[in-house]
Image (cartoon, rainbow, N blue to C red; front, side, top):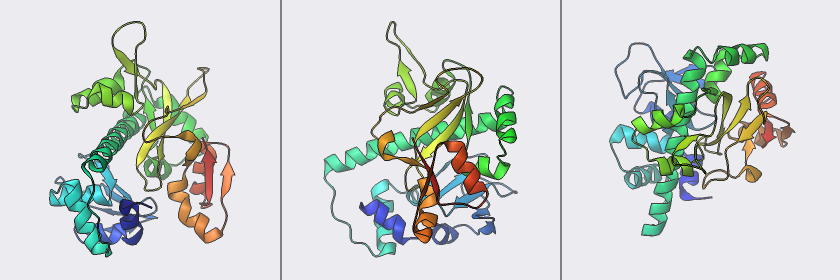
Length: 280
């Protein structure tokens, strides 16, 4: 276990964030006014099961305990790490420049994947094109709380919808390719979105950070399901879908139930059977 994971294991994200923001319990999560923009209705949600937070209002930002402290205290990664390590009673060892740069690259890829997840989620809830996807998910029995909790999304049936959205946010195309979201054309110059016209399932690591996507086609498009490719963050042979939200229940039950697909996991969790995961 790395030092970042050890800090997250020792610290309660709700307790840390509550020292900055008043929170109220809302089901399995906690809710409050976003500390990063002015608002009257609470849109800031903390998810203790995944150790993450997200603003569903004007910010559209989110992350883990580290990104919250970095943003709230205006600190660099290393400074926030030191601050939380002291709080957790962990002594940090100096990192080499190479290790620091490697971690910075991984953080950037996680940030890009989270930006894509936020974009896809907004489209699922708001775009006219996603009406068929919303109807499908409703027929399958998923409720709004589940859609929000796992940030289910929709990719427009366009060649460059996500590419243009992330370009406006000043992400380099080469980084989007490395994150597995964009594909370089083989026969001519240019790039295009990997996922188009599909329901998007964010895939998260144990800390609840988005590292890739599973995508279900609408209609008769093939393949029916596809995943993100192999990236520095995502290796489908070593990832279990839903493990970030299932691990506490697995530990309590002493067993894990492995099911076939994303929808099976979501429906089980929705009905309170939380020790359920799926292989890629």
